[in-house]
Image (cartoon, rainbow, N blue to C red):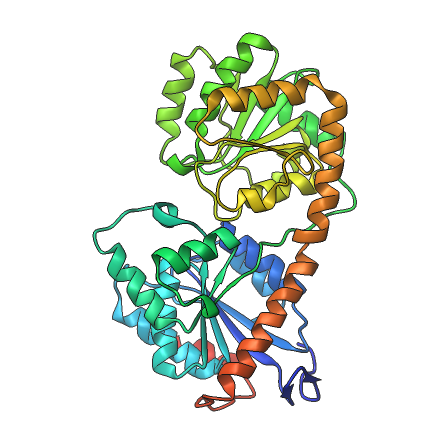
Length: 410
């Protein structure tokens, strides 16, 4: 750990800002990947992070540990567990964070409530999606859960302006307590080589010479993959050599396979499942398409930019903020297979357009979505919340050593 005792920065003196992140699980998911990039770029002299998951562990736990930050699994046995609340409370009391930052429902519920009990000055919840797409499951108690989450947290972070507006309008968050900061992505200087492209195409049994349209998405209703299959049928009639691949898994997989088979597209539309190495499958693509019916902030589009691939997306939610039409990519109406097909055919028929979108898209995105830029915005937010909240409420006793004592309490 960095020596933090003599640091003086932006209104706080003599100590780093302690931030405890709480996630539902350490599986490889959007929130854990986002946090890994963010924590990797936080100034460790100014900020002292730790991270815990509510249940399940996962592969990301080791990656966080390798960053040199304290990492914990509260190991919740059930969705409703007083023991988990007690563990979260003990962890928070021992780490004594200035800020508890939570991601997703269980972390919001257990983490925020435990932080309230422990007297944490700032409890920051994260809004990642919009309206009915905010959760995988719809519950009769959703309105009550939303109310509890809003009342437990002191502040909210939205991953796009679209999400912020939704939180204010439908979840009744006060506008001055919701800050929008776009998701950050790493832009590598060396893109994947041809060997990765060959490997993926061999796996999918797609010849190297044919165009490949790629989508990376969870196979769930809001991602609009069924519309993409409809568009693929239109494209196939005009350009029979074009192949499509949708990397991901989810509850609609069987329905999509039936739709693909019924349309006679078995040899054209591929569902290779979840892919851990996004860079490799992006390397094999000629065009990236995201057909979502709604998006909070589409990381898949940012990953396509980083791989310097031309992008087509639907004009919904945060995708409108992620894509500047006719500059960084093309926007089409949602749930419109014909418009999507036309944009795909247009791009695949015009190499100069593809090259321009790929080049300008990466350049445009680097200035707005680079994790370095985004991490600075997070740091500014954390500092402001620290100043605003800690000056009013500083009930936690500062503890100088996290060490083994914390692990023993959970």
